[in-house]
Image (cartoon, rainbow over all chains, first blue to last red):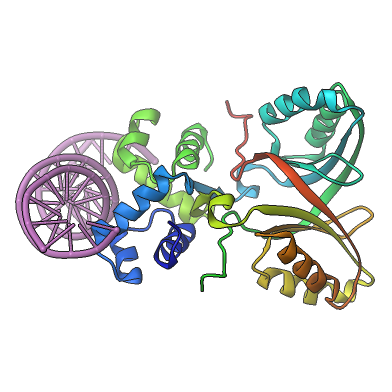
Length: 152
Length: 152
DNA sequence: TTTGAAATTTTTATGGC
DNA sequence: GCCATAAAAATTTCAAA
């Protein structure tokens, strides 16, 4: 399914999800119909999950990013915590991890006052035994769609 | 610039960056022309940074995610490290932080063998004094375009 | 799976409010 | 800023290889 051509198509779409099938067809040397057919297949197979837009956080009033380490005192609290996290509008990412803390959350908000509020909310989730917050001073890199390089 | 209407437009585009301007125009009760004009303005202003695609990592052979804490022994190594990180194909995110380590990297790759190689590469970057790696057991949440809720 | 061409839909351009 | 229309361009469909 993922051959050299589909990888090139994905690269085009990653760079600009709104690019025209005719542009892609030139780059991959295939007809427009074939390109569209391949894209449809990748959508149906779930390889392409979603077309989306990257927004400048600062211009929509989200000027503050923080990473928060969260630990649970017992795994029985896992499901409830996950539910809360999924619903929280300021949690952009949440990963369950190996190591000395259990979760790492990326929090995006507009002010330190708001972060303080969020921090308090998370600390009060049942089972949360410890948190540690790191402010993001600068985001060096932030890529969303990683593609393998081993087919090149 | 970011009023209620533009926020609704961004919500549509976030859900599906390829959705038709006519669909958006129905949802926000505006003409197709007005919708397109507002989108063009947000592109020009840099509010809309990029249209992109979310890809299922597993289906393209990226089955392993890790978070790596990295510390520098001296700030003079900052620029070179940043250059290396930006060019590294398996580093999806890199944030410069406050706290007891300096950077947090998100690494996406296909195997633990490959992660071991990447880990060695990063440890050998000049100035890197310490690293600590956390395996991602499960990604609970991963949103790319956060929008403010205070205009609702 | 790919292609090419017709049918349909969308986008762009423009003039007026 | 917004709208409506017309022209241009894109996508979808479909028969055929």
